[in-house]
Image (cartoon, rainbow, N blue to C red; front, side, top):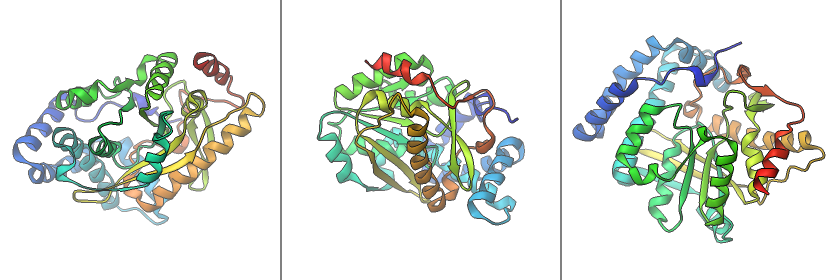
Length: 319
């Protein structure tokens, strides 16, 4: 059994994040990126569970022996995207080269006026999604985030961009509140963005293949998609080094349907398709995987169910 990812302490704390913010905003991005090297080395030495999880993941993804520099490159990539969140929120995308793929498909979905559910993962930078908001300010964006997991980072980001913080749907509020907030946003034609790879404590999980072994993914995002009955697209904000990001939108389903009969089979089918796309982008950009825990063994504190009765409750709330 491994420690659940939610029980791991937030890296750095308020003082460290304040210091990074001060250096970044007053010294500029080049100075901020220089500071990432000692930060990377510090976390490599001090965060043993994350270091070991990185090594295990990279061995799966790269298919070869992993050396310490591979792990430090992995940690550095994560630190770089955290730093860039500060600049993306404070200055928008003007300091970055953000290419976008699938924009025509995204706009076609939004043109239906039904709203849109964007499902992403902890790969690359979900913050790169803000580029679409700046290019299309007429389309509201609501992001579902757990403010309680990283309170110091949440405070920092909301201080930099209060208007963006006001558009966050807090995932710690509970299932019914989240569902109602998402449904209201979709009725207004908004994009609602949600990360769909990590299961919270006590959340129902199902195992589907990922890199050759069954891995636990949360059922909740798919029950929400079933309840909302809006188009679903996948979104990946891949960090390509330097100031380059690639924002990819992929159509996934016109609507997610999980019938009362054969629920398990329907969930397995849709989640297996999702995991296949996650694996595809792992191979495209392995150092963009930012789940620094033993992803494949992470059932601790969660329920892995054969027939998730939570579907009925989701349907009742969304009725």
